[in-house]
Amino acid sequence: MYRYSLRKRVAIAFAMCVAVLSVVWGFAFFSAIRLSEDRVLAQQLQRAAESYPSLTMNLRGYDEVGSLPESLREWAQTNPAEGLYEFHTEELHVAVIPTNNEQRNAFVVFDVAGIEAASSEDWWLLLVITGVVGALGALGFGLGVLVMRRAVAPVAQLAKVVADIDPEKLSTEDHKRIESSRFGDDEVGVLARTIEKTLERISAFVERERYFTGSASHELRTPITVIMGALELLEQSDLSESDAKVVDRVRRATFEMKATIEMFLCLARETDDGLYGEQFLVMPLVSQAIDQQRHLLNGKCVDVEIDDLSKPIACGHSQAFSIAVNNLVRNAFEHTLEGQGTITIHIKEHELFVTNKVSSEANEGHTPTEASSHGYGLGLGIVQRLCERNRWSFSLHADEARVAARLSW
Image 1 (tube, rainbow, N blue to C red):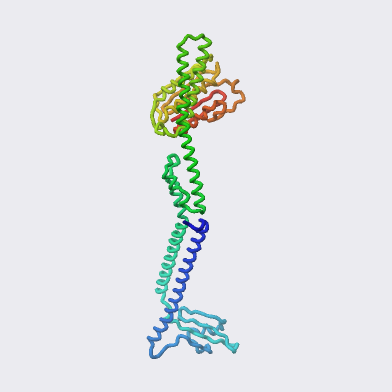
Image 2: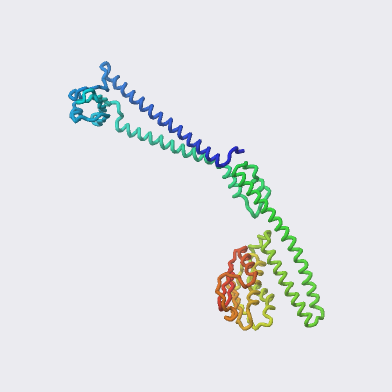
């Protein structure tokens, strides 16, 4: 396993890359210098061999301006300062040297004719140097990528493992792949241990959720079923008017409790994803919700109008849709007072509107809101979550004249 931390490995990799490139560039420059020296000496030797047996002298010294080559005499008469001069046309290099006589200087002339490379050779040499530099640059880039990839390989491996894990469907193999012991004790190991602990907590939470929903589904519904059965037997017996009203209130409260239990179980359940793709008719569920909540209009002079222009079909969880519609209808029935007008339920192909009018006295000082459930029951927050779960859209608009809930699918 890795002996150093990720930070140290990256620093070491960078230092190694720079060191290798420096050595390669050093060898390249050293080789270029040696080749230049060898070439100059080879050119001088070649020129001497061509003039054998009378050997030519490339370097000559001159004490007098008049003894200089004719092409340099006019320039020498200007009394140039001490230094080195180059004459490209004459292919001469001249060194001006001071002498004891302050009135004149000495000259050393180096004839490079036949020694310096021709212009065409210069272009070839430039091309070769460019190619070498480009090759070294590519080598450095490839080396840097290779070294850095090796340095950050644990991070890439951990990222790949995490990307392949589905948090909603954790398995034993997922826990083995993310096992922190595979990533050492450096920063990557710390990150792997944190992710491992997080996955363990998620797995434990999902297991508790499955156990709870499985147990609650049976333990909570059983007493409700018993109560509803007992109420049916009571309703069949001879009851006084006051007892019948009490039984009716118990029946409604029991039904609301059953709806609440089903609503929360529907939100908590993770194992019925297959039901979120079913298709169902909207109108029967709306009619059922109206019938179940109609008792809330007892004692109120309020009309309910259903504007059904089509027979829409929605896609999702039918029970979740029924719960959402029940909440919207119940809120409309509960918050509509006598004399406030008609409750309208408008059904389109992909939308459902539940609208109830409100009096200005009841809403004095009320500020219009958009998509706000404040004052309209906890149920609207649950409706929002059910819609998000089924990829439906829900909004609520309230102003001084009316409250309109919109559910689209």
